[in-house]
Image (cartoon, rainbow, N blue to C red; front, side):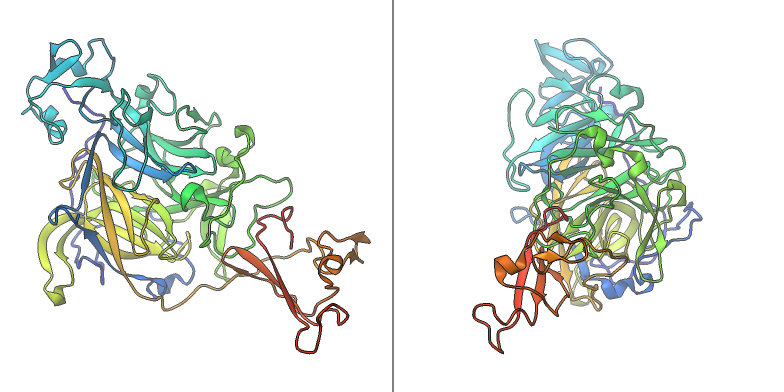
Length: 561
């Protein structure tokens, strides 16, 4: 008998109007049940379209099957939230399944349990489903041949799969565990069945995995943090979580930023929060909130934040993660919550979760996922289910084909994690989806889907393609908030502190002074200009009295010209 912990069939019926989307759609869905919190908006929130770069979203069909956009990897389970780790592999956390192919789920290997009541053992260790046509076996038999005999595999509320190779053509393994490396996360034992903990999101930062978890499934009462340094042994944060009943962070979806979070620049981990895994009873559009936490803890100092944007177009080498007891990501008191935008268009943060305000322009019926897309230079939020719509595939002015009333997902984009967010496009959906940060194209991205909208209850992978345009506005290079002297850059002697300088520019470069003090960031380097430098330096003349230097340092301690 195939049983699971929650209902997965999505029922549409909610409502809003979205214009100019890739799959052209008018939504007749009655929105209801949203919180009364007034959205705080983003930078110039009333001009979100001016920041947009995505004109249309298309669910790309497979080259080998023009009628099917999904590549099925028959690993049984749902959710499939993913991250791209430092070792180059894709890790994906699933719920309610085995995470394996050609295996019948069971609770106790080698012992009778409630699952086994629906099986008959045809030879030692091999089982068949008694009634493949039964409702309880339906979703399993959508993937596998119910008339055949199979071995069994442990069923788990939350497990982790490691996938090697390019997306979606992974090199799958046929060993005893196939590609599963962890079960019953984060406990590692049958305590996982007490509350049926499920993954909200997964992110690799340097050499550490972080998972936001929630329980019970569907309509959770609590969310919390878990972590692992190898993906196999997991630990739940012992500190009491503030994300309990009523919190919009019971399901928090962390942003992935490239491999092992290497595209991050400001030293923060960002996450989008909602209250429920699925809000379908009744269908309710959930507002979305934002939190962040520093990746490093320095006594008396804020995390590095020299740049105005929290990402970059070149990868940076992240330092090894600190011991767990010193890791701020695992300290709930270190988190900050977005409360609005100030008069300088800068985000405002509070240490109090109850003061968080929803982001304008974001909504979803279910758990989604978030990432920074370097090709688009935009943050993306993907919801696999925002309602139902009468869709047309392609541009209706160019002979687009109607595909009728279907459940739909949506892609949202923004230049910053705090906005301004806009709906960029919709596509046939009706399931929980997760963006895949690995192997994203310049104008495309892979994602996972399972258990709804005609998609089987297994790991399915598809690709979204974007038609783009230049934004009508661009972000400033930086925004000065506060400043303080860190060190003297020019010369060999700091006459304010009466100490030698670290940079020793006179000794090293014959640069004694300058009248050009403006530094700037470009492609991951901080550049310095030196003007009217010492006329006695070698090679000087009236045309060559300027110099330039750069550093790749990310911290004050590492700064070296």
